[in-house]
Amino acid sequence: MNNNLSELQQRFYQIINNPTLSPKQKNQFLALEAEASLPYLSIEDDIAQAMKDGVICDMFEGHAPFKPRYVLPDYAKFLSQGSEYLELTPAENLDDALNMLNIIYHHVPSVTNIPVYVGQLDDVLMPYVGSLSDEDIYQKIKRFWIMLDRTLPDAFMHANIGPADNIICRTILRVDAELKQIAPNLTFMYDPAVTPDDLLRHATRNICECSKPHIANYPMHAGAYGDKRFGIVSCYNSLPLAGGSNTLVRMNLKEAASKAESAEDFINTTLPTYSKLMVELMDVRSTYLHESSNFFTNFLATEGLIEESRFAPMFGIYGMAEAVNALLEKDGKQGKYGHDISANELGHAISEKLAALVDENPVKYGYNGKALLHAQGGISLDMDATPGVRIPYGTEPDPVTYVHATAGHHKHYTSGISDILTIDETVKSNPEAMYNLCKGAINLGYREFTANVASNDLVRVTGYMIKLSDIAKFDDEGSRKNTTWLGAEASKNTGILNRAPRVVSIESTPVYK
Image 1 (spheres, rainbow, N blue to C red):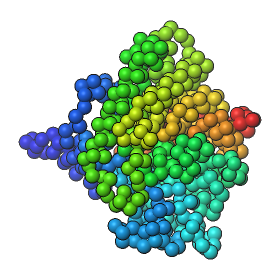
Image 2 (image 1 turned 60 degrees about the vertical axis):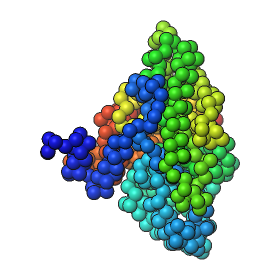
Image 3 (image 1 turned 120 degrees about the horizontal axis):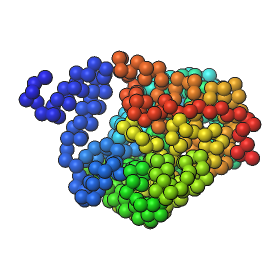
Image 4 (image 1 turned 180 degrees about the horizontal axis):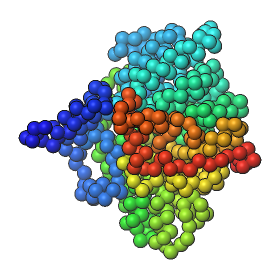
């Protein structure tokens, strides 16, 4: 390589000549390098120092953000009104609706350049079913599902179904279990007042087959945003429908705890100090997006599919387990996060304080003027810091103990929280145990229930899906799926493959009684 090239130009050539990347993937990585080559937005020295110290992270959204991190268009409105910009008339039948969705998805941006939200699909598609037979619907949905995975091969793409029982919901569950694709990710909304038990059983049987779907506590989410006014996107991020997240900034609680003298000092001084810096950084980033990038002049906004006022920054945290353990040690106390009452109670107190700080500190561009607290699932570069408020990999207790240890956190994280329970493969012969565990977790206050089954090829990393078979051959062959490299990196750096599968039985899951 020419030694006269700049460091940036050398990185360009490394991407261009990479034998395992497709041309489309090369385009994406080149674009990321271009964004990162711009000077960073003007920030105060204390924010820059907190970022340098590893306490605050901006999640690599670009130095001059020109698109929101996550966008949740109102797809039902799009199908009913058509689009002048896309030269589309309103949908008249299911074929029209599926074709129109396929078109608009390629115009919905995100931090990944692929739509992270493809809609509450049963609500969106049911008006167009008409007199189609169940078999006709199955064939159309199956082709649609394959199309999504092959044209938008990104595990952060996310579909929602439920809580009501209908043919689209059940067909998507059937197709998803058959195809076992990484994309789209899937959340089933569960509402005990609406969802029949046999439909929840169908969803939890699917988890046994393919580690999907997530099961969302619909009343808890609707209480935060309003009925039918939100979506679960990307990994497990809950955000306003017709809006989204303009930026995500996160705090490494482990590193923040290292700056504190005690648990009391951490809660009363350290967290408020860094929370203020978080808000300032979110304001700098969202201000550029809203006031300089011209994003909100595009057709999604002008045709009423998104509303600027429904975007909010996500205030993310991770490393709760390490922070709690470190603070107990500083205080000369015994206890281990996830295993001891004193440790778990300290963790709950930290979450309660974080929720109060987010509520007390308004942001310039937020949802009702506020940011949204989020238990961030980690990224592939994280080392020695557990995602969100999860119990560290390899030290997980039995599933019921896990649920009791972490349930107290869920009420505080409006914009999403996920504990991934890794269940032994014996659950496949006893799917009622998965149903009981899920129902119990929801009744105890889980916002979102998520489980991997140890023998499945399809598993979750932080919330997105990978196939272990893809990881095994990635170094030699690459992958057509955009997120395989993240999963491969995470498996090396973050210990996701060290998760401890635990046996769950009907007798051991009375948590809902």
